[in-house]
Amino acid sequence: MFGTEFLARVAAAEEALRQLFPATPLQLNEHLSGRFGARIYLKREDLTPVRSYKIRGAFNFMRKRIAEGAATGRFCCASAGNHAQGFAFACRHFGLKGRVFMPVTTPQQKIEKTRMFGGDAIEVELVGDFFDDCYTAAKAYSREAGADLVPPFDHEDIVEGQASVAREIRAQLSGETIDMVVMPVGGGGLASGMTRFFAGEDTPSPALRFVEPQGAPSLRTSLERGTLTRMPQIDGFVDGAAVAEIGQIPFATLKQFRPEDVILAPEGRLCGTMLSMLNIEGIVLEPAGALAIDALNNLKDEIAGKTVVLVVSGGNFDFERLPDVKERALRYEGLKKYFILRLAQRPGALKDFLNLLGPDDDIARFEYLKKSARDFGSILLGIETKAPENFAILLQRFEADGIRFQDITNDQIVADLLI
Image (cartoon, rainbow, N blue to C red):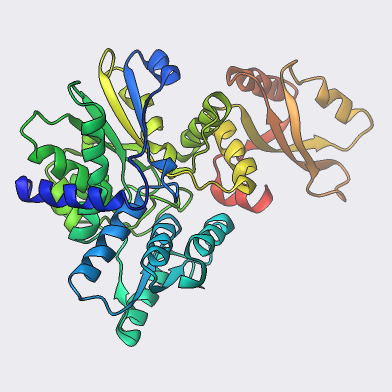
């Protein structure tokens, strides 16, 4: 499984991919290297034609079906976005018809890009709220229409195609020791493919670390329990990597690792990483694309003085999501909080309240929830500040002034209802 035969198939996959695009850049990032005291390279999979590595597996699967003479002439897939775009691009390249099943909740930018890459070669059908819904629909369509279903990650040919990322990295850093490779994990196709490639080489394998969204820890949970585990519920914010269950084929490879080798990236911290890369480096990343970079926060003591490669994928970000990303980042960093508080209904009460705020406290939201109350009114209050410790001072002032309040920042149900 990890030997020369697999390496040969990966070499063939990479050679075929050159029909579509050159090897993606491997760039030494001075900002991250200086910040973490290491030589940090970014493998820019966000610079493929579809802005993610997913095109590699989809293309490899389809080219092999065609070469084998097994293709029916029609393909289909299910995807929350990135796999769909790679699939659509490959359909148009091969001149074959395809149908893409996507969740209704897929960001509009990814839907439109899928249509753009596929052109007249593909049809897009929106089904259900989650990936599992559209995957069920895709499998049903495959049976009924006799179409070849191109899986997003759980197939040997997909794993083989994604492994071409590792082959490019090795060639681009030829002669230099790679101490660690950090890669994102959703369904596990990329992670298992790269693991197999490095394990099959004659040279020592670099240390491997994997990164999942904290709200969708399928691999980490499966490793902790020692068996493939389906998550009963996931947070879909990191739509490019949030899956309920890692693939069976990828897990067969990845089950050798410790749970500690899988880093869970909090969604709020991930938002801060996205904003940092956008503002400092001008690199536009979707949440899944920032996973490997965000993991540096967990690895900083382990990587000092070492050469580290981060797989960055993808870059399909809908800028309509930017306010939500900023909001999540501020909350995670402790710079923004929401409160429900009781304020006396008397002349001058509002002025007295405003005098409690510090010089760096800014009111971002102020809304009466019960305007008809005679003695006290309930208020929804949102405050941004420049340092987290400012909130401790502010709350002491609230208490000293007798203001009753409730912090609802992390109360998901109440916050979603009111904010």
